[in-house]
Image 1 (cartoon, rainbow, N blue to C red):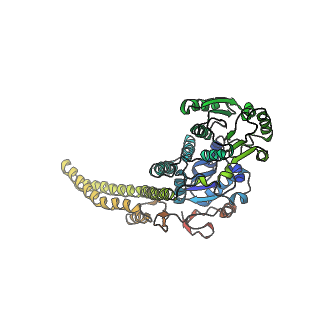
Image 2 (cartoon, rainbow, N blue to C red; image 1 turned 45 degrees about the vertical axis):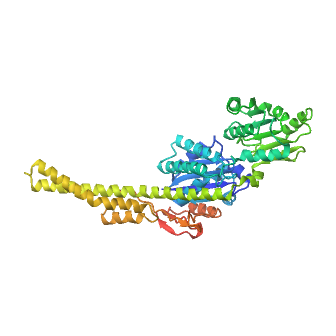
Image 3 (cartoon, one colour; image 1 turned 135 degrees about the horizontal axis):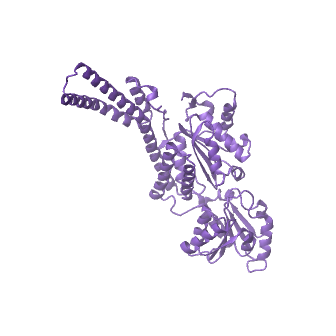
Length: 493
């Protein structure tokens, strides 16, 4: 069993594609259930943020798992497979682990170093775990990934500026309306991104925040958080009062995750008409649209006196970068933690072989003691017990060094060959030992750090899906993950 990752992010796709692939909180459990009902997936977790959708699945066959995950995404998004594969990326086995560690560290974020992705991964894990969709493999991967993210943020300065998508958007807004201190702002959406927006607005010195949400109770909770934790005069209103709220503000942050426009062209016209009767008439109205799909209707950006800052424009903002030294330090930590994780996985894989060997030795000892009883039936119990203890001590001492050493060697690339040697030398039955999956080597990059050659090109996704739909049985083989799809070498699973 290995981890397969199929994803689409701001690095691989335009916002128009991300909008179609986006998975809401309500849809995520249903999609995870569909994955678990498929033939090749035994565990599944979906990470969905404002700029990425990634499916992590534990599969028993690479080609079968890839076909099932890609089929799920095409049906959910409504995109033809060919369009999806232009923007998708695939990682397998240790390359999937490396990618998750980089994401958790903020290295793959649109705003490099932002910490919100850690809570998003934690939420994805919790959601999958609540559905009993997480087993040992994904549990260990997700928990290690969260630890990597925490270590990167505590040991490097990658997030020293406290950057996030919200902070970069507000910096852009300042360039349009000037300083935010003392102003009124509107937050549309009361989820995690809405909470982050509240915190950043308070830090910017905003005097009043109006929280607008379809569910008034959730808006009230966020407003209460603003008042008690951030000292902001915050008010919650229903969605029906959105136009009224926009008429009295200069900055509107939208982050609902809703399907379809939340702020329409008509809403904006009415808000601008209301502003014309106030002292805000001469000031521009700025929308920070952080929703995926977009919350603000596209035509709104063409209105005079209106500026729209969206995810697509933030991708090009230089403030989304991080210092080169901090990024390098973070990548070094990811490489170090990846090596530790893989070593642990390899040691765990050899444990069944060691356990089977010790059980085989114990069975031999018991058989010989029974044979001794039949040959020397009059042997006194004290003498027999001493013989049994002596034989067991001898066997334990003989096995101690090889079993300890094989665990040590198993933590190195190619270490599974030692476990195979034990199985061959001691004639351990295949059924008595869990199959030890052949781990794949970690290459060294130019700096000597662990790196992975795996970087499947999305263009091969369609080919692999086509392979799965051919009328021929599953071969039971996987490909060497370090090779492109079209040139991969077959390995017997």
